[in-house]
Image 1 (cartoon, rainbow over the protein chains, first blue to last red):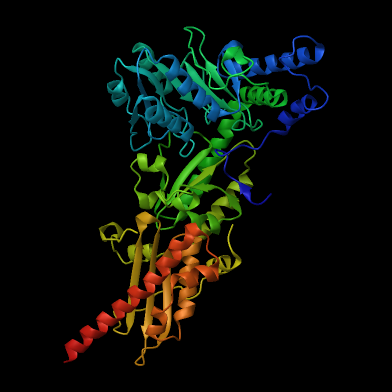
Image 2 (tube, rainbow over the protein chains, first blue to last red):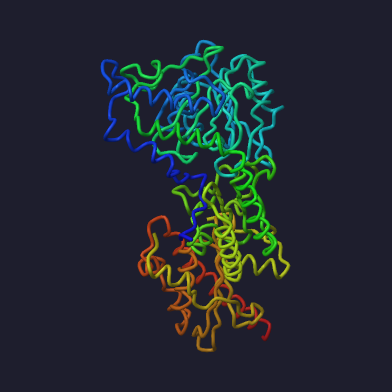
Length: 404
Length: 132
């Protein structure tokens, strides 16, 4: 077993060695520019890109002509939101998104709001992290041009009801963009079943290489975008720039593997996650799951360990690579905005740890992690004045603390 | 990511525990807030000569917060109250080589000393006024 045990699959996934094998010839040997139409170097590269495009499209039930290759999901989100907002400006100036979206979505919307005069509704979520469909329906006006809601949350793994959101958007004549970076390859996604118009994907979240992603752009009915990168008119004018053939090939290979293995893989990952959850929660008290347990990615377990601060927890489990919603782990002083938007109080947000499991996680690793976590929590609670107060029967929330 | 001294205090915290908070010679300081991600409890036992003979802490917080409180318990043991009050957060930050984002941990440790001393002094005054 390699230490530290990697349990941060929502941050990135290790690349599958089978993916790397398919990429290798496209670096040195077959180096052609897929946009070169005049010779065989270009043709073979174009063919490889076409195949990858087909593999990506197949995984989400799309047509390969609907796939715009980008540098990753952040670029896809930027292109989808700013590109659609600018193109459809004459139809309306209102955008709706969720408070728990990824920063790439939130900041794109924020930019349109502050610099380009759009109005943005930041919808709150319910305690389980799910969108309130009635509130969404109520928020849509005749000025609304775009709704951007993610498939699976990167912190909690909570899955939004995409088909219902898509139906609602379609019936009200509003474009639906879905950031599906965490979901593609983990849960079945079909762009026609969820009625989305734009969908962001990232390769490195599905065991592919970093630095490549895609934006699905619906052809029927046709969705138009104003490009944010200008140049040679690649990707049907929506995203200029020479394609990174090896990365695109790897992206395609990763999608093909996900297509074949998703069902059995997710069953196994779910079994591992439940093993971890039961093991931890049966051995220590005052542990809480953040986000809905049913509507959730199999590979995500976000737990709050009451009275144990997240960063010191990560130090105590340094043989496990995880991330925390505690403020101490980020540059800002605020704890996780995702958990806060779900109504998790600041104190509990500070104690949250995200365990991310995936393709290469083993039973041995899960058991090691649960033993390590239980030991660390016991040690840190012995150190915690809050835990001591709880043992003495004092209600910690009843105390007037001096915020600093 | 962490300085060795922080790691040492974090892994082998000195003087973890509690003193009897009802003892008139014990001062208890509790600073910080759970919502901010750190709470420090520092207790001192003071003898008749104003010397801190024992100190204990418990801290909810990041590694730097734990290390800062552990370090000050070491520093104040055997010192007089006035010497303890003279300890500045900058000395703690320097000793542990805390980065700028962790300076507040050392501030909290200084505040914890002040709070414990204040508590000790007010208990002493109360017991004097009770006796008289």
